[in-house]
Image (tube, rainbow, N blue to C red; front, side, top):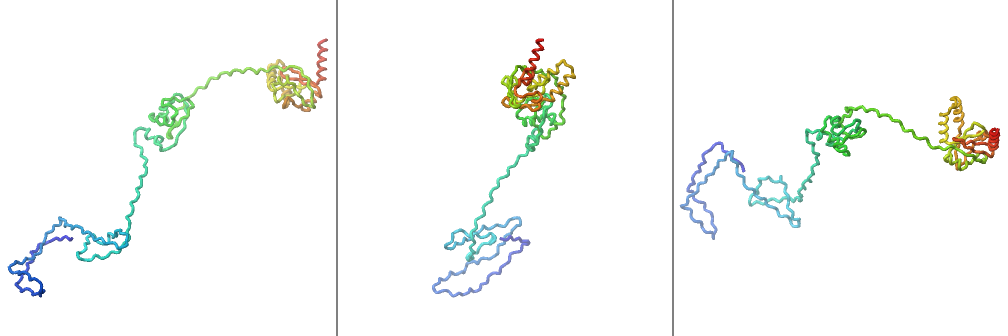
Length: 361
């Protein structure tokens, strides 16, 4: 439809009256009934009807006329033919009595499936600003994982005092308590306790108190080991330079696996173990002999000690030691308090006989 706006109104056109012209004579069929006479009927006056249309008033829209649906050809699937929307204008109305042109069959196109709904991404809620330092702490919200390990050095430290000294706010003690769940909220930490603090803690600002030195107490003097003196006389046979110690001698030497052998003050050898050597050192410290004599004895004795291993109660003398004491076959072991003296049997008999004669005189 088109809107018509009349700028100027013009008077309707006058039509000339019909004259009494004689009617046209048309041949009538033989069997046709003659029309009734028109004499005496008024003729209608044909005047065009003009309707004023205002610019503000919308023009009436005629109802849409449905398009004729073409019949699908025989043998087809019976699906409707989709006609693109741009093929015909929306205001196209086929005239009545006309033949609608055939439209080429277009393969049916199924409408596209709607896109799958994408689930919204999980959004991490932002922390709500709060005046409390606990809510804005980087450790409480999980924004950072940096921590500081702090060792308590003063007495009377609690979560609240630690938060005041390291974080500048005593109300942040809750953060420290959450990071150290093994302690109670009212715990008082001992010196040396290791705690975990948030990464923004300033441990350098903690005052380190002075700790007094502990008083020194004298150690209790352990009693000296009870070492019995070595005693007895035991004859022994040498096998070359190998000596087998008798059972009582092994018991007195505590079945040690090493014996200490050195030249003696006479033509004999001294045999001892570590325990009896310590007893000998104590005796030398308390000796009433002159210091020079004691020092000379120490030099010669300790410098000539030889460590000989003992296996199954047997040990082997060195060639120098056996030659010094003149040991050949028969020997005698004599217990002298902190050591055993090893004598050649003939020399020991001579020594004892001489002492008996001196004693008799």
